[in-house]
Amino acid sequence: MNAVINSDSYARDLIASFERNAAEAYAATLKGPVSRRNFIKISAGVGGGLILGFALMGKANAQAAGGGGGGRPPGPPAPPFAPGAYVRIATDGKVTLFSKNPEIGQGIKTAFGLILAEELDANWANVTVEQAPINAAVYGTQFAGGSVSIPMNWDSLRQAGAGARAMLVAAAAQEWNVPASEITTSEGVVTHAASRRSMGYGQLADKAAAMPVPDPKSLKLKGKGEYKLLGRRHTGVDNIHIVQGHPLYGIDVQVPNMKIAAFQKCPAVGGKVASANLDEIKALPGRGRCVHRHRHGQAHRGDARRRDHREQHLGGVLREEEAEDRLGRVRGVEGQLEGHQREGEGARQAGRRRADARQAGGRRRGRAEGRQERRVVLHVQLRVAPAARAAELHRLVQERRAAGIRSRSGRRRRCPRAGARSPRRCAASRPRNRRCTRRAWVAASAVA
Amino acid sequence: MQKAWIEHDVPQCGYCQAGQMMSAAALLKQNPNPSDQQIQAFMTGNLCRCGCYARIKKAIQTAAVNATPSTRTA
Image 1 (cartoon, rainbow over the protein chains, first blue to last red):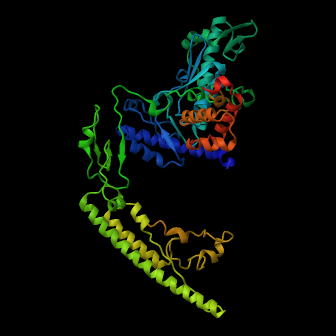
Image 2 (cartoon, rainbow over the protein chains, first blue to last red; image 1 turned 180 degrees about the vertical axis):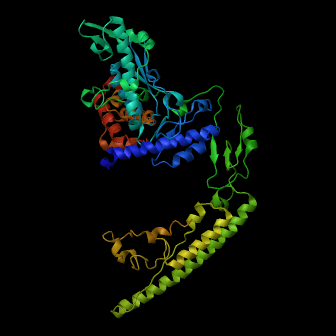
Image 3 (tube, rainbow over the protein chains, first blue to last red; image 1 turned 135 degrees about the vertical axis):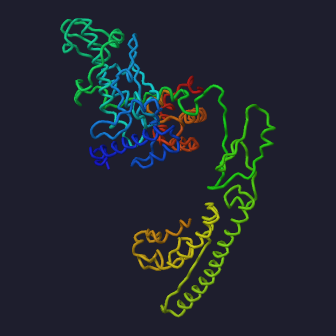
């Protein structure tokens, strides 16, 4: 597993797919504001699992959008090289670094800070890492997912840190009138060894800000042997806030005049709100409470009136006529299965009698066939399908019966693959011997 | 408790940690020297999706060891 994760081609492919995804998301934004649903849909095609992204850009960037040169897919324009977007140095020497990707506990805020500080040669004890604002023009795509934050930003972050350092060095070179090549930096201090002069980053900050931004390609980045911060364990930059209970999370966000809503969701897919006790709620004390009924069956801020037990099983609150309709169909399927159960029960008893008789006879003669069946209705109850689906479910049940495959709680027949009569006799289920590993046995458990 | 949390690098996303620490403080108030099982049983209600449980336990043990009578009520 490690070999796969560390291999270049894997990282390259994943990054390429993310860049394509960003390009698609960007293209979608040109057509209009990206709804959250669209963005999630676009992201779902990418190989990585969870993606939390901020790749939303306003139409203003459309003018700036180029086609992208060479092999790069057309997409968001590469942000201009701007060390200042990542590094701020105050005149008292305090360094603030900006981490552009969302931090969700994976530690990227700390890691990005370390990468920047390493190339910047900052004094880590003096560094504060802050969450960068959402600004794709400045930061490019900002998202967390697929473990690609570091591979995607490794080069650009090092360049940003090194670029800021180069500007400080240039400022010192101008200040002392010495060639930049004779100047070294370390721990937030710029030193000219030959003349034994040194200045802190804070002192040079204003002058450095006035220096021209260097060409990123001209920057010399550190080799692995030169790392002072990277490759060592560091405490997470937010730990000090976390242990003090500081408000760091989305739930802590406050905006002026904000309202707070509670959310009541229909317990099953496809359900619609039939009624809600809105009057009761409006009569409650307190200002600014409102209730909306969302078309997907979610009642905000109201307790949808509990219907009777049967309708609960059909999936929450339904309109009267729909409820009756579905009840009828579900009952139809239930009836069928009940019939099977009785049949199964009878067959099982017959089987037992035959087995007893055989044993009494002391010889194996023929085979005892026992069947047992339990209702599979549970799945129908849990998953509310549109009315038409009940008929489909019935058809599926019939099909599976014909094919001889049953769920573990249903009728057991010959496993079509291993040929055994029961999991216990199935060679494929040994050495487990109790639980069949064959998919056929359990396939029918997913009825819907 | 906070110092132990920092020392052991306990949090990842940190969302549960305020509750973890409060429960841990209550535990140590009740039982200044809990065993592993006692820690586990007491803290069982505080879930951590990031899975920091091992470090939480270590931090509680450290805090228990380092607690002086004056800090125990904190």
